[in-house]
Amino acid sequence: MSLYNVIIRPFVKKMDLERASELGLKYFRFIGRIPLMRSLNRWMYGNKPKGLQRELFGLDFYNPIGLGAGLDKHCELYNDLNNLGFSFVEVGPLDSDGVRQACRNIRKDPPDDILAACIDRDYLTSFTLGYDFFDFFVLDFSSDPNTDILDSVLESRLTEQNYKPVILKLSGDTSSKDLERLTDFCLMNNIDGIELRSLEQVKKVHEYSSGKLPIIANCHIDTPLQASEALVAGASLVEIRTGLLREGPGIVQKTLDYLSKNRKTPKENGSTI
Image (cartoon, rainbow, N blue to C red):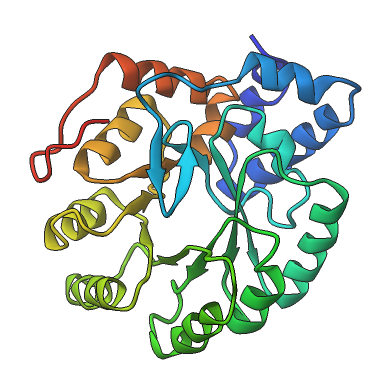
């Protein structure tokens, strides 16, 4: 049992998500300052189970579990959090000032694994500033699903030597009609994937795209069963944030153990998890 389960978990289970995130972040920041704790966590939570690796967006993920944006908002603790067993960490959401600070942090402390930036404002400026520092970008269109904003971002990517994946993130209340419209847009405009906020959205987009559009499920996953359901519904990756806060760092290992023992096959495309 980790210190988190003893000290933090009893409190965060009763808090709203925002307050739980603040308390959890303080704990992870404190633990990260203890000498050798990073190496110890990486040894304890080094979750690279055989059979759960996957290649997406040209990147190699050693398991399908990532940490969603909203916890490491200022790109400060990505390595400490990644060492808990996540195959990638999504930081932010960031605007252009946030990306500038994130780049300064990354120069001082290069990422150990895959690092994604969630951008919710100043899309073009943020994208170009962070291009050399992040492995992929999640453009959060939760408040305004206007695809015209994407044109300049996609054009700027054409000028870069190295290709960086772009993922479109939608709100949980996106209508079925808009889901279809935005799925079509992604497929026709070289958007590498889509991040969705509910299991119903995952099922809808997976079926509508015939499994051709990779999906990251950001569905407030708290349990291994919920992670499995999202993958079976058609997600390629799942993000755990609330589960980390409510259940503690062991949630990643528990989820991967569950996935290894309970592999199922999506009906639509026959791929296994």
